[in-house]
Amino acid sequence: MAAEWLSFTVRRREAVLVAPAEPTPHEFKELADVDFQGTTRLQISGIWFYRGNMGMDVGADPARVIKEALSKALVFYYPFAGRIRGGVDGRRPVVECTGEGVLLAEADADIRLDQFGDALLPPIPCSEQLLQNVDGSEGLYDTPLLLIQVTRLRCGGFAMGVRLNHILSDAAGLLQLLKATAELARGAPRPTLLPVWQRYLLQARDPPQVSYAHREYDEEEPVKFEDSVLRSFFLRREDVRALKSRLPGDMQKITSFDLLTACVWRCRIAALRLDPAQRVRAMAIVTGRGRCSAVVPPGYYGNSFAHPVALSTAGELCGNPLAYAVQLISKAKSEMTTEYLRSTADLIAVKGSATYTSSIGSMIVSDLRQLGLRELNFGWGDAVLSTPMHADEVSHFYFHYTNTKGEEGVVVMLRLPAPAMERFAEEMESMMKDC
Image (cartoon, rainbow, N blue to C red):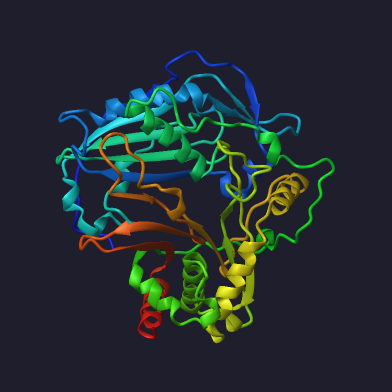
């Protein structure tokens, strides 16, 4: 958990618009139907922390380096420099490529990176100062699509907070832009991976052909926790191996995602003390990248994920061995195919919009470990940490972490009411003791 005593002051300069370094086309680009899932109609944010002078010239200013490289990257990724315009007469919103630019602010904080210690895990102290809102930029339409704040630390390191309009891109697409920026910052003449728009690939078919039940979109009463807390749990690699040892021999090759999600699902439902007959679900955000190449080619940076769902009851989930939950998660994840993604686009078109189920018995999991978030090198080496900054009532995130002892592992980040969070921690601890 974060150190509550840790506080510092950030002095931020006025944000500026960073436009493409060269003229870019002024045009309107259509978005895909999957760009309008309920999970994308919002702003998402993350933060990266870097040590100082890890290969970069002493005295180099990270804000200046990133600003100049970003301007070059926007020549290739020029839709990011535009604005999303609301659709008229029932038509889908579009991106107007105006070349106006993205927002970037530079700041200085009176703290060293080593003062954070393990308080770098969410909730990060004073995180709202490391990515401050710019008035008028928080909307989804007619506003800059990206906000970046580079905060210099006293030790020569820095933090980079990023907020993205999720309609334009998912986390993998954002990282594609940032990796291009990092390559250009290190002197590359052009990005290794060039961008692909082609949003028509994930637009609904004509006529739509919804071929799956899509229980992830069941309409149930959304949950809103009062007095909720955000917390991170660190599991070392040996902890994950110990958990896997609880499974039968024929399940030893299951992925760490399936295992972790089964454990978290059981602990969450037990902590919430739901009625045994209550229907519960775990939704896994699964990307089409690498598995649905017919509709998600290399370089595609739009939203390209779906969230197939595992269903059970609270009683069955908590009363059966862990292997039961693991099998449900594995089966749900295996449903993610090109047809599933196309069916999702068709469903969104039919319904006009589709919001995933956010009832009290629901959870949705995003595994960020495969994205290589820490491997974002602007000239200062890889990031010490990269993490989302927020999670809502049903969202869970996994990401890589190395603690102050040098131990590698995975962090599970989630939000629950304070009493339920204490019970969740107890359930996790009990599960580990049983290994």
